[in-house]
Amino acid sequence: MSRRKGKLFVISGPSGAGKGTICAELLKEENARFSVSMTTRAPREGEIEGKDYYFVTREEFVANIERENFLEYAEVFENMYGTPKDVIMRMLNKGRNMILDIDVQGALQVKSAMPEAILIFILPPSLAELRKRLEGRKTDKQDVIEKRLDKALNEIKLIGEYDYYIINDDIETAIEKARSIVSAESCKVPDKVKPIIKIYENEKGE
Amino acid sequence: MSRRKGKLFVISGPSGAGKGTICAELLKEENARFSVSMTTRAPREGEIEGKDYYFVTREEFVANIERENFLEYAEVFENMYGTPKDVIMRMLNKGRNMILDIDVQGALQVKSAMPEAILIFILPPSLAELRKRLEGRKTDKQDVIEKRLDKALNEIKLIGEYDYYIINDDIETAIEKARSIVSAESCKVPDKVKPIIKIYENEKGE
Image (cartoon, rainbow over all chains, first blue to last red; front, side, top):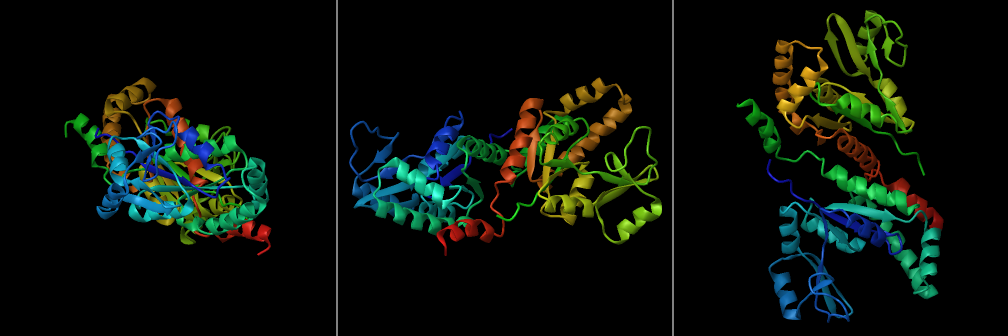
């Protein structure tokens, strides 16, 4: 049988909804790989090329834009960040499932560049609970938290663009659901069914 | 939040592929119900109305055909068998997932009557293995087994009409995959997303 191609799973949702934890769990799967971003920012202490980021010059980054090698990219505080298509395609062709942890805007860009990507929206059980989680982190001031909550609601309004959604009210259940989605997607009947039929036909000597 | 509607899962595949065992496992799920067929044949010893079958007269059966109340029906040895739509719709509206164990021809009829049904094809790992399983049952003569194998190959050729497929080379893995499909389908973003967005909007008092 011809090797099954991998799929790209895009995990996104509001900050604080729990997508990081869910991605980390999905990556424990032997066949899954994390999609590494390309960036123009300088490596920080301990960051490893090809694991944390692909570190490139601005010229290299722009060259990648020009040859349309990004599924999405954005500029944040004068640094460029992007998801390189060639690396992902290579891994998918090897049969690996790729996991991409990204914000909602980025996810929609990916979907438009690669419609076969599978978009999973991680939702908080409520905005009140999201507020509690953000406050619990103690990293953001109150006005930043308010902005994050407004942003969260605006992001949730885009849920119709997604394939799946998971309301993360219990992290174990949410992880189980995310795993189910990855497993079920690998059971989808592909567009080209000939290779499957051929296994059985060849056996019959037809 | 408005109650999530259930989904109809149609489990089919060649005789001997293992769909019965997989259905039985799926039905252990609290929210799942077996789709009970309607038949004109007489109840056998111990069969319970509404559990094993809905037993009806030929006139009642024909009346159901006329009001287009079957997702599929067929005549087997002068008895009529059919899958009543009204019962299934009622259960789906209650939020139950319905499990239907049916042959490939029936499954395709269901899909055409109800395109939102989810078709899962259970495949044997090989025709040689299917032969071994059929021979192991000791219920069929050799010529019947040959016919079943020919039929199996013809059924497999229809896999393109299905949504998912599971190659049952290990029953535990196959059951896990079937469970994943049911779980993932319940995470699908519905066509109407307003009710989901409303939960969060109402909270913000918008």
